[in-house]
Every structure is written in structure tokens, then in C-alpha cells.
Length: 349
Ligand code: YSA
Image 1 (cartoon, rainbow, N blue to C red):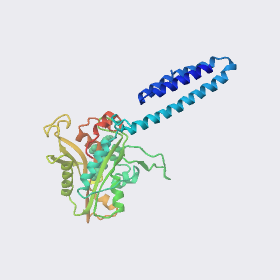
Image 2 (image 1 turned 90 degrees about the vertical axis):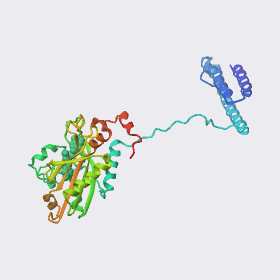
Image 3 (image 1 turned 135 degrees about the horizontal axis):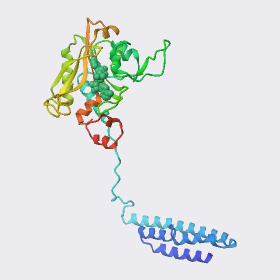
């Protein structure tokens, strides 16, 4: 065995010296040191030797391997130095690189930015508030007392925490309107704010309803604010978001915290107002609830309704995004399907 090892060493060194470039050196490495190389196979056969020969053969075999590996490194360095001296680049830069995978913004974020940008251009400030809310702010202060039927449409998720009276006074907010009260408690008019945020409702989900969704609330309070300000502001918002040719319709609606209350709709951009599947044949698409802040709500936060008036509105962010981008199912937003999300890569922020 010792002789065979020495004979292999001599042959390997001679062949290595003849290798004139990197490719030839790599072939040499595979021929001797690779998984099926000559030295590897010879070393494997040492295990079959009689015990008295095995030890010396093992030591000699390891020595040959170390010597060949050292010689290989030396030869590699020599070939690289020779290539450098002839001007050949040390690195193959002709191989195309791998493009890094870049993410994009979520459609909810894109729409949130568009809406906030439209309102900040009109002089509104953006503020945020808590998603876990007191019953007081979510209902009571908005003129929705405990026995009010309006609570039924907002049956929701209550926190498992009881006060001394045995009531559960905290919930996941059902709308962003409680922030109207929080803002008015903290600031004095003039107020112009928009409040984007998550809302939670105990809903049977379908193509237009999710149990977690985003709203954007708006509130403006000052002396002399009228319904004309509400209409003008929301009309300008619709124009900025959906284009200058959009028409807007206001119709009466009921919310306990406004008087009068309205719903706002835009003319359907799929059919131009003649009626289609998207607008259920009406020619109009509702985009938000709004109204003049109820005098009782103003009184509760210490504003004199004889001096101050205001308007407020609340829109469903995903519903607006669905209209803007022709999305036919709200559940696509939060099911993390990359085929859906990738379509928004590169959409203007
Ligand atoms: C009304 C008047 C104001 O002065 C201020 C705000 C409001 C809006 C009120 N707070 C509210 O929540 N009305 S709403 O129940 O009709 O919801 C407003 C919008 O949120 C809807 O038009 C819809 O776009 C969206 N929305 C409601 N439930 C939803 C939903 N979006 C997705 N999934 C749900 N389950």
C-alpha cells in the first residue's frame, strides 16, 4: 500500500505541473481528490487491509492527501498570478448577475397614501388613534346610548374585561368615528383632520365585507361651516382621486352622530352612469357616509353648537381601492396571495 501511495503521489504531482490553466487544474482535482478520484478510492481501500498494516497506511495516505491539497493551492495561486500579469481579469464578470427580488407596497397602503395625499392638499392633518376603544367613544359619545338600535349593525368584538358594574366597556373599534371625539376633546377649533385606521366587525365575510378593514374618517369644525363646505370638500376629493370628469351625488342617510346625514356616491366609471353590474344598475356607486356633526356631539366635548359647526365623513378604504383598480372581492386584500399582490408592484404611490 505504501508503495502504491508513493507512486500515486509522483504521478499526481507530474500531472499537476502539466496543467496550464484553471480548467485543467479543476479536472486534475476531480481526477485525484474528487469523490471518485484516484486518491479517494485508494484511501477507502485502506479499511480492508489487515490490522497490522492499516495504521501505517492510514498515516501515509493522510500525508499524501495533505501534500496534494497544499500543492493544489500553490498551483492555483500561481495560475492566478500568471493570469493577472497577462491582464486577464481575476473574476468572470461576463456571468449575468441575479436580480434581487424587490417587494412592493400593499394595495391598502397605496390607497391610504392616495387618500391622505388628497386631503392633506386640502388642508387636513393626518392623525391616528387606538384600535381597542372604550364603549364611551365608540358609541356613547357619538349619540348611540346602550339601548339604541344603531348598535345592532355594529355588533362586534368585546374585550374580556369587566368594570366594577360588571359591564364590558372595551371593544375593538367598529369605525374610526370615535376619533372625532378624541380629537375634539384635545383640540379647539379650527379642526381639520383625517384619521385612517383598522376597524373590526363581527361580519359574515363576503365579496364586499371583511371582519377587519380600513376606514378613513374626516372631521372639520370651525365657526360658520356649512353643508356647502362638506359638499365642496368631498366633491374635490372625488375629483382628485377618480378624475375631473367624475360626477357626485348626495342623498339623505341616517347616522346618530350627524344631523343631517348623507351618503355620497360617484357616477359609475364602468358604465358612465347608464347602469351595469358594478353599480347594480343604478349608475351610482356609494363611497362614504357623511353629515353635519350633531349638536349633542359638539356639546358633549364642550363646544357651543351656537358658535361652532362642523362636518364629518367616513369612507371604506378597501371599497374605494376595489373601485379604483377593478378588484371584485375584498377578501383578496388580506389572503396573502402573491399573484394578487404582485400586480401592484410599481403602482404610483
Ligand atoms: C358617517 C357619518 C359621519 O359623519 C362620519 C362617519 C360616518 C361613517 C360611519 N362611522 C360608518 O362606519 N358607516 S358604515 O358602517 O356605513 O361604514 C362606512 C364605510 O365603511 C362603508 O361605506 C364601507 O365602505 C365600509 N365598510 C363598512 N363595513 C365594512 C366596510 N368595508 C369592508 N368590510 C366591512 N365589513
